[in-house]
Length: 266
Picture 1 (cartoon, rainbow, N blue to C red):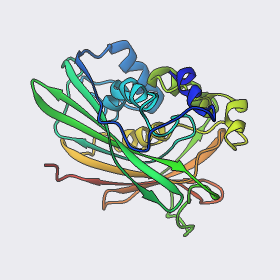
Picture 2 (tube, one colour; picture 1 turned 90 degrees about the vertical axis):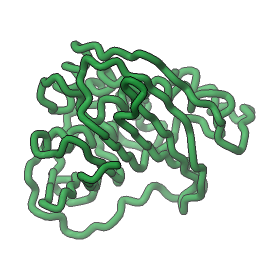
Picture 3 (cartoon, rainbow, N blue to C red; picture 1 turned 120 degrees about the vertical axis):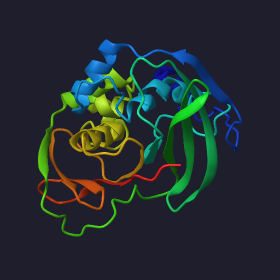
Protein backbone atom coordinates (compact mmCIF):
# COMPACT_ATOMS: atom_id res chain seq x y z
CA UNK A 1 0.00 0.00 0.00
CA UNK A 2 2.91 2.37 0.64
CA UNK A 3 4.12 1.73 -2.92
CA UNK A 4 0.67 2.63 -4.17
CA UNK A 5 0.59 5.69 -1.91
CA UNK A 6 3.93 6.90 -3.30
CA UNK A 7 2.25 7.53 -6.66
CA UNK A 8 0.52 10.46 -4.98
CA UNK A 9 3.88 12.20 -4.54
CA UNK A 10 4.16 12.72 -8.31
CA UNK A 11 3.54 16.47 -8.90
CA UNK A 12 1.26 15.87 -11.88
CA UNK A 13 -1.06 13.70 -9.82
CA UNK A 14 -4.37 15.57 -9.47
CA UNK A 15 -6.23 15.44 -6.15
CA UNK A 16 -9.65 16.62 -4.95
CA UNK A 17 -10.00 19.39 -2.36
CA UNK A 18 -12.40 17.62 -0.01
CA UNK A 19 -12.41 14.41 1.99
CA UNK A 20 -14.19 11.44 0.41
CA UNK A 21 -17.50 10.17 1.80
CA UNK A 22 -16.29 6.59 1.44
CA UNK A 23 -16.68 4.21 4.38
CA UNK A 24 -14.47 1.13 4.31
CA UNK A 25 -15.80 -1.87 6.20
CA UNK A 26 -14.63 -5.33 7.11
CA UNK A 27 -16.96 -7.87 8.72
CA UNK A 28 -16.38 -10.77 11.06
CA UNK A 29 -12.69 -10.08 11.73
CA UNK A 30 -11.13 -12.73 13.94
CA UNK A 31 -7.97 -12.02 15.91
CA UNK A 32 -5.03 -14.31 15.19
CA UNK A 33 -3.75 -15.13 18.65
CA UNK A 34 -0.11 -15.59 17.65
CA UNK A 35 -0.10 -12.14 16.05
CA UNK A 36 -1.73 -10.67 19.14
CA UNK A 37 0.92 -12.31 21.32
CA UNK A 38 3.69 -10.82 19.15
CA UNK A 39 2.07 -7.39 19.39
CA UNK A 40 1.78 -7.66 23.18
CA UNK A 41 5.46 -8.53 23.50
CA UNK A 42 6.61 -5.64 21.30
CA UNK A 43 4.46 -3.10 23.17
CA UNK A 44 4.90 -4.46 26.69
CA UNK A 45 1.36 -5.74 27.33
CA UNK A 46 0.72 -8.86 29.33
CA UNK A 47 -0.55 -11.98 27.55
CA UNK A 48 -4.26 -12.11 28.45
CA UNK A 49 -7.59 -13.02 26.83
CA UNK A 50 -8.53 -9.33 26.48
CA UNK A 51 -7.44 -7.13 23.60
CA UNK A 52 -5.15 -4.23 24.50
CA UNK A 53 -6.99 -0.91 23.95
CA UNK A 54 -4.73 -0.09 21.00
CA UNK A 55 -5.14 -3.40 19.17
CA UNK A 56 -8.37 -2.58 17.27
CA UNK A 57 -6.38 0.30 15.76
CA UNK A 58 -4.05 -2.34 14.29
CA UNK A 59 -6.98 -4.34 12.92
CA UNK A 60 -8.45 -1.22 11.27
CA UNK A 61 -5.13 0.10 9.96
CA UNK A 62 -5.32 -1.62 6.52
CA UNK A 63 -8.74 -0.04 5.97
CA UNK A 64 -7.36 3.38 6.92
CA UNK A 65 -4.43 2.96 4.55
CA UNK A 66 -6.76 1.91 1.73
CA UNK A 67 -8.84 5.02 2.35
CA UNK A 68 -5.91 7.44 2.50
CA UNK A 69 -4.09 5.87 -0.44
CA UNK A 70 -7.12 6.29 -2.72
CA UNK A 71 -7.11 8.62 -5.70
CA UNK A 72 -10.11 10.45 -4.19
CA UNK A 73 -8.15 11.44 -1.07
CA UNK A 74 -6.97 15.09 -0.97
CA UNK A 75 -3.44 14.39 0.37
CA UNK A 76 -0.72 11.81 -0.28
CA UNK A 77 -0.52 9.52 2.72
CA UNK A 78 3.28 9.50 2.60
CA UNK A 79 4.38 12.56 4.56
CA UNK A 80 1.26 13.01 6.70
CA UNK A 81 2.03 13.60 10.39
CA UNK A 82 0.07 11.74 13.06
CA UNK A 83 -0.42 14.47 15.68
CA UNK A 84 -3.07 13.05 18.02
CA UNK A 85 -5.03 9.92 18.81
CA UNK A 86 -8.15 9.30 20.87
CA UNK A 87 -9.39 5.85 21.85
CA UNK A 88 -12.70 5.06 23.52
CA UNK A 89 -12.82 1.56 24.98
CA UNK A 90 -16.51 1.07 25.69
CA UNK A 91 -16.05 -2.31 27.36
CA UNK A 92 -13.37 -5.00 27.56
CA UNK A 93 -13.03 -6.90 24.27
CA UNK A 94 -12.30 -10.62 24.39
CA UNK A 95 -9.70 -11.80 21.88
CA UNK A 96 -12.11 -14.50 20.66
CA UNK A 97 -14.85 -12.02 19.65
CA UNK A 98 -15.36 -11.49 15.90
CA UNK A 99 -15.40 -7.76 15.17
CA UNK A 100 -16.95 -5.63 12.48
CA UNK A 101 -14.69 -2.72 11.53
CA UNK A 102 -15.39 0.55 9.75
CA UNK A 103 -13.18 3.48 8.79
CA UNK A 104 -14.03 6.93 7.42
CA UNK A 105 -12.45 10.37 7.11
CA UNK A 106 -13.95 13.43 8.81
CA UNK A 107 -13.53 17.08 9.73
CA UNK A 108 -11.00 18.61 7.36
CA UNK A 109 -10.00 21.85 9.08
CA UNK A 110 -7.22 24.44 9.20
CA UNK A 111 -4.17 24.11 11.42
CA UNK A 112 -1.58 26.80 12.07
CA UNK A 113 0.95 24.64 10.22
CA UNK A 114 -1.31 23.45 7.40
CA UNK A 115 -4.51 21.39 7.38
CA UNK A 116 -5.63 18.51 9.56
CA UNK A 117 -8.32 15.84 9.45
CA UNK A 118 -9.51 12.79 11.39
CA UNK A 119 -9.61 9.13 10.50
CA UNK A 120 -12.46 7.63 12.52
CA UNK A 121 -12.40 3.87 13.09
CA UNK A 122 -14.95 1.77 14.96
CA UNK A 123 -15.14 -1.84 16.10
CA UNK A 124 -18.49 -3.50 16.80
CA UNK A 125 -19.44 -6.87 18.25
CA UNK A 126 -22.92 -8.31 17.81
CA UNK A 127 -24.05 -5.06 16.23
CA UNK A 128 -22.95 -2.94 19.22
CA UNK A 129 -20.00 -0.56 19.07
CA UNK A 130 -17.34 -1.58 21.58
CA UNK A 131 -14.39 0.59 20.51
CA UNK A 132 -13.79 3.85 18.68
CA UNK A 133 -10.53 5.44 17.58
CA UNK A 134 -9.90 8.89 16.14
CA UNK A 135 -6.49 9.53 14.59
CA UNK A 136 -5.73 13.15 13.72
CA UNK A 137 -3.30 13.75 10.86
CA UNK A 138 -1.61 16.96 9.79
CA UNK A 139 -0.75 17.88 6.23
CA UNK A 140 2.10 20.36 6.67
CA UNK A 141 1.95 23.31 4.30
CA UNK A 142 4.39 26.19 4.23
CA UNK A 143 7.35 26.62 6.52
CA UNK A 144 7.87 25.17 9.98
CA UNK A 145 7.51 21.76 11.58
CA UNK A 146 5.20 20.33 14.17
CA UNK A 147 5.39 22.14 17.45
CA UNK A 148 6.87 20.23 20.31
CA UNK A 149 4.87 22.05 22.99
CA UNK A 150 6.13 23.36 26.31
CA UNK A 151 9.67 22.82 27.44
CA UNK A 152 8.86 23.03 31.14
CA UNK A 153 10.87 20.84 33.47
CA UNK A 154 9.21 17.38 33.44
CA UNK A 155 8.42 15.62 36.72
CA UNK A 156 10.61 12.83 38.05
CA UNK A 157 10.13 9.78 35.82
CA UNK A 158 8.30 6.65 36.89
CA UNK A 159 10.43 4.61 34.48
CA UNK A 160 13.08 4.94 31.79
CA UNK A 161 12.91 2.92 28.58
CA UNK A 162 15.58 2.30 26.01
CA UNK A 163 14.08 2.56 22.50
CA UNK A 164 16.37 0.52 20.25
CA UNK A 165 16.26 0.83 16.43
CA UNK A 166 14.63 -2.59 16.20
CA UNK A 167 11.50 -1.13 17.84
CA UNK A 168 10.71 0.41 14.45
CA UNK A 169 11.02 -2.84 12.51
CA UNK A 170 9.44 -4.95 15.24
CA UNK A 171 6.40 -2.69 15.49
CA UNK A 172 6.11 -2.51 11.69
CA UNK A 173 6.01 -6.31 11.62
CA UNK A 174 3.23 -6.64 14.23
CA UNK A 175 1.19 -3.61 13.13
CA UNK A 176 1.49 -3.66 9.35
CA UNK A 177 2.67 -0.02 9.35
CA UNK A 178 5.81 -0.23 7.21
CA UNK A 179 6.25 3.50 6.67
CA UNK A 180 9.99 3.82 5.83
CA UNK A 181 10.47 6.75 8.22
CA UNK A 182 10.20 4.15 11.00
CA UNK A 183 12.27 1.36 9.48
CA UNK A 184 14.90 2.87 7.17
CA UNK A 185 17.61 5.46 7.73
CA UNK A 186 17.36 6.46 4.06
CA UNK A 187 13.56 6.65 4.26
CA UNK A 188 13.78 8.80 7.38
CA UNK A 189 16.27 11.18 5.77
CA UNK A 190 13.97 11.68 2.79
CA UNK A 191 11.50 13.28 5.20
CA UNK A 192 14.00 15.32 7.17
CA UNK A 193 14.83 12.96 10.04
CA UNK A 194 18.47 12.02 10.69
CA UNK A 195 17.46 8.57 11.95
CA UNK A 196 14.31 6.41 11.90
CA UNK A 197 11.62 7.52 14.36
CA UNK A 198 9.46 5.34 16.59
CA UNK A 199 5.80 4.87 15.63
CA UNK A 200 3.53 7.19 17.58
CA UNK A 201 1.08 4.37 18.25
CA UNK A 202 3.89 2.22 19.66
CA UNK A 203 4.65 4.98 22.17
CA UNK A 204 0.98 5.24 23.13
CA UNK A 205 0.68 1.48 23.51
CA UNK A 206 3.87 1.32 25.57
CA UNK A 207 2.52 3.95 27.97
CA UNK A 208 -0.80 2.13 28.39
CA UNK A 209 1.05 -1.13 28.95
CA UNK A 210 2.89 0.55 31.82
CA UNK A 211 -0.51 1.38 33.38
CA UNK A 212 -2.00 -2.05 32.76
CA UNK A 213 -3.87 -3.44 35.73
CA UNK A 214 -4.70 0.01 37.07
CA UNK A 215 -7.10 1.14 34.34
CA UNK A 216 -10.91 0.97 34.55
CA UNK A 217 -12.89 -1.49 32.44
CA UNK A 218 -14.04 1.29 30.10
CA UNK A 219 -12.30 4.60 29.48
CA UNK A 220 -11.18 7.21 26.98
CA UNK A 221 -7.49 7.91 26.43
CA UNK A 222 -6.26 10.94 24.49
CA UNK A 223 -2.68 11.54 23.45
CA UNK A 224 -0.91 14.32 21.60
CA UNK A 225 2.26 13.37 19.75
CA UNK A 226 4.93 16.01 20.21
CA UNK A 227 8.53 15.64 19.07
CA UNK A 228 9.41 12.34 17.37
CA UNK A 229 11.55 9.73 19.11
CA UNK A 230 14.74 9.37 17.08
CA UNK A 231 15.99 5.82 17.55
CA UNK A 232 18.02 4.81 19.44
CA UNK A 233 16.83 6.86 22.39
CA UNK A 234 16.19 6.74 26.11
CA UNK A 235 12.80 8.09 27.14
CA UNK A 236 11.37 8.94 30.55
CA UNK A 237 7.80 7.87 31.36
CA UNK A 238 5.81 9.78 33.95
CA UNK A 239 2.32 9.11 35.29
CA UNK A 240 0.27 11.13 37.76
CA UNK A 241 -2.66 10.17 40.04
CA UNK A 242 -4.83 12.52 37.96
CA UNK A 243 -4.56 9.95 35.12
CA UNK A 244 -2.22 12.03 33.03
CA UNK A 245 0.99 10.62 31.60
CA UNK A 246 3.85 11.67 29.36
CA UNK A 247 7.03 10.64 27.58
CA UNK A 248 10.08 12.91 27.51
CA UNK A 249 13.62 12.64 26.29
CA UNK A 250 15.54 11.32 29.30
CA UNK A 251 18.42 13.77 28.82
CA UNK A 252 16.93 16.98 27.45
CA UNK A 253 13.41 16.73 28.87
CA UNK A 254 11.91 17.52 25.45
CA UNK A 255 8.34 16.16 25.16
CA UNK A 256 7.50 13.22 22.93
CA UNK A 257 3.93 12.50 24.05
CA UNK A 258 1.35 13.77 26.51
CA UNK A 259 -1.78 11.83 27.45
CA UNK A 260 -4.84 11.79 29.66
CA UNK A 261 -7.30 9.09 30.66
CA UNK A 262 -10.97 9.65 31.47
CA UNK A 263 -12.79 6.78 33.14
CA UNK A 264 -16.22 8.18 32.25
CA UNK A 265 -17.19 6.71 28.87
CA UNK A 266 -20.53 7.08 27.18
